[in-house]
Length: 147
Image (cartoon, rainbow, N blue to C red; front, top):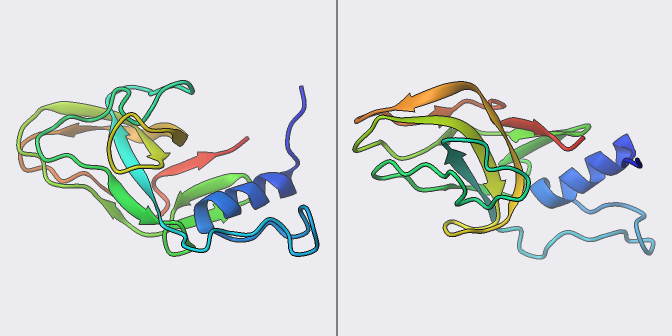
């Protein structure tokens, strides 16, 4: 089984999450970032959405829930080696009902719908959401690897 080198993993994550060029790939200017970086969207899940799942798979459904937009930049994400994490605190909307137990997060392409997941991982601890609870994650708390 082949795998990407550490340098390739880092370059790929930087291109996807922080919109940084992958130097020397292709011609001398490398694989260029997007002209307009845009955002990626963090979603919460009640179970593992799986590698074949979408952001709608097992997605949180508490009243008021919505995915959170995070800029494709160093202000939004931190990339170190084969690891990507949130570079700023991520705060979701307050719950108007419950309980709902959240176990996983995903980072995907759209603010709603059954859209592609780029990465997903388990939360460090399950989060039980009831009325008045605002799911929030400190810098680096939403953390996953590409390996």
